[in-house]
Image (cartoon, rainbow, N blue to C red; front, side):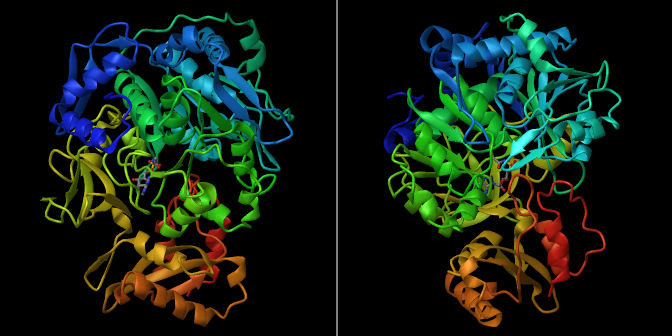
Length: 635
Ligand code: 7RM
């Protein structure tokens, strides 16, 4: 039996029990056997959820890039670390070996050092999905600088807020980015942002699109000539286990974005260990996660987790719809992808299109399919399973958060039997708890409640940058001695977890707690429906009533709207119960979504409640134009 690579269900249960009975001994063994350390830890874990303070592997010294790069050179130097698939399929893909990646990271690290970046300094990275982005993260880690990646789809306002919050003195960006048939002027966005960021002394610019941009004298420099001149080796800064590795902002339900701080050793150990097991990665596999590195999914499961395992990780610059809706599957065929990890929103978008886009390609290399970011509805699950996996690749519905650093509740493929819409079982070392309204733990099976975690795991975020009080209030004050996730979940008869959505998505109708996800699932089962979102609005008798926003498939467009409304409610009655029937159904052309694909229910709730005078912060919306359209046609 190997505790590092779980291959059977009995093994899962055995290792799980071990990991919760004696977490310190368990994680110590994993840390010892699978990573390189400059100095061993003194204490495996010390924690106090009241303060809160959590420390893993205290006293240990290491550099995460030695684990992701240097240690692979003797055995995997010529192995491909990163496959870069450009936006334009005509442009050649790049295969970067571990040796080449090591060299590129060292050069960039030296350029940062030359610009005065020191251990502990924050570096803002605002780059598209090109190799320099991965190299930039690792270059920061090489010299002990803290990276703060801002997704390159964010506006200049969002960018300047984040730069200022963590006081970054330097920004890495590119002239522009390619997305489908568009070229986006990234440098222009940076220039605008920096009008509000007097602390930024340098901007290093990657040449990607070759577009004509403004370069601010003394402040802005092209990166490539500096890299060419830089020395190709760079001594790794020796870091403490608990030194910050990065800051990543996540939007809160209110207020400014929260800069979640992740530290070095625990994050490395947990992301590597989850990557190995959740994707059942074996040595010559090609792994592809379609997320952007601007999100936690990209940090943990494009860069650190895969590279710590010496894996081949694919970076895709483009979008699923360019040059057509077959692009994902074309890339899977072209690079013989073995593990494919994407979001339900992408699956639903592709499921709307002609099946020929999938059927055209040879997907037989696929062994594992992953899902992350929101509950995957039953219809999307089946579409993914039937048409992409050909019922032959287990789907891992992975539940986790920016704050958790790594995957928390998930099947292990070929080990855990899967059930659509269930994230199934806690990963090794994770101790979930469901809490009721009286802040009491709900034990046993066939129960539901608010999802918490009782015990620290190595990659839990340690604080919110510059605001430890907010960290405590947000995650550790709702329930004593628990990390509160903000999500609701149910545990079924066999102990499987199903995430029902953010707790603030729970709608109480006539005293019944209704999660949005099961109702949306029911609606989406209707053959004419592509996607839907429901929210509550105030109702005299029921307290709240339900308002549904429904996007029709092309085939549904010609149908009589009132008949459709009846059928949708019939569908809900059958799947959830008559209590969940919608009072109002508005057919829409799109839903307001954040750039990471999450429906912004807050806005839909305001529209449904006729309370549109102040919609709040919409700066993180991908498609702000849809809001007006929905408002104009609201019922
Ligand atoms: C990885 C990521 C976190 C929130 C989380 C949930 C939702 C994520 C799933 C999911 C149901 C899943 N980080 N969420 N994964 N809900 N099933 N498999 O997405 O910080 O951006 O979002 O996303 O509500 O709290 S995140």
